Amino acid sequence: MADLSVDLGFCRLKNPLIPASGTFGYGEEFSPFMDLDILGALVLKGIYKDARPGNPPPRLCETPAGLLNSIGLAGPGADELQNVIRHLGAATRTPIIVNVCGQDDGEFAEVAAIFAAMPEVAMLELNISCPNVKKGGVCPAQDDKHTFRLVKLVKAHINKPLIVKLSPNAVDIVAVARSAQEAGADALSLVNTFLGLAVDLEKRRPVFANTLAGLSGPAIKPLALKLVWEVCRQVRIPVIGMGGITSGRDVLEYILVGAAAVQFGTVNFCEPAAAVRILAELEKEMERLQINSLAEIKGKLQV
Ligand SMILES: Cc1cc2nc3c(=O)[nH]c(=O)nc-3n(C[C@H](O)[C@H](O)[C@H](O)COP(=O)(O)O)c2cc1C
Image 1 (cartoon, helix red, strand yellow):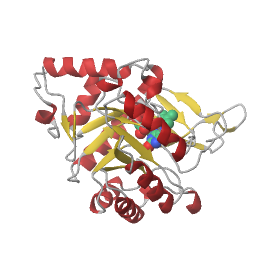
Image 2 (cartoon, rainbow, N blue to C red):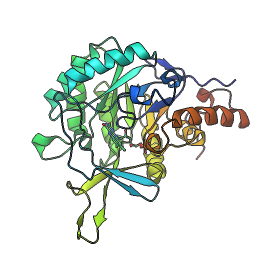
Image 3 (tube, protein in one colour):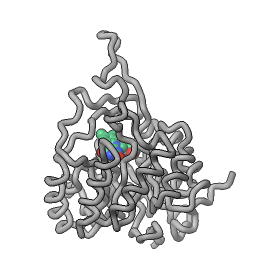
């Protein structure tokens, strides 16, 4: 059987499949659909220090081959999530990744320190694509200098590997990626959702209260694949690619452009056991294409 393991430098995962933040709840919601131990790792829904109700409805709007969301990072807050993680850690051996959010740099560092101290948490993912309320909705990932400052600050507060999650809405995502690397990020993950607009023609208003929302799903795959390819060529640290993955073939495409591992999000909503199918397809495709290990094809796109 082909070798599905992947090397993130600071750790090895048994396979590259990681459910994406915000699309896999807090892990245990998906245990009726699969053995969580089949996953390479899993990312929990983004968390702030305090509980948040999120945005008013509607929060989701389907588009052709995609999904717009404006959840507003609803969540129970850091205290409650620690209890959830203790439970989840006892239920699975799969590495748990906490997706850290903050309204300002201090909150990012505080939340990161809380979860880095938990033995059940393998690594953190810094969601620098969420709006910084104090700066009027700007997210740190839009600015390479802010990204550098923030990643450096968070790294000083933790002793666990840090994945920095980038936004496709940055003007120059490669500059932001390089800044995160120089500030000490152990890996990058990309992409978060693309900003989009849904219009209610009858009401002549935007569908969402916040006007703009985040687009994910198969509609973004070619755009995301391009950004992952560009960033992989310009950084030394591992990149976790995502955007519209729904099949084993999609996974191989991301590895071929240089990703070390992948995350898959929106597909979990229409098919809760998607991971089981994607894993089986990945094995079958590797056999058909005579690929013995993922390392063999990583970054081998010929252009
Ligand atoms: C409903 C929903 C909620 C999300 N919540 C988060 C979140 O809490 N933190 C985060 O970093 N990304 C969040 N994302 C972005 C996903 O993790 C992922 O980056 C994006 O959906 C692209 O992957 P996909 O096309 O496979 O869904 C969310 C996406 C969706 C659709």
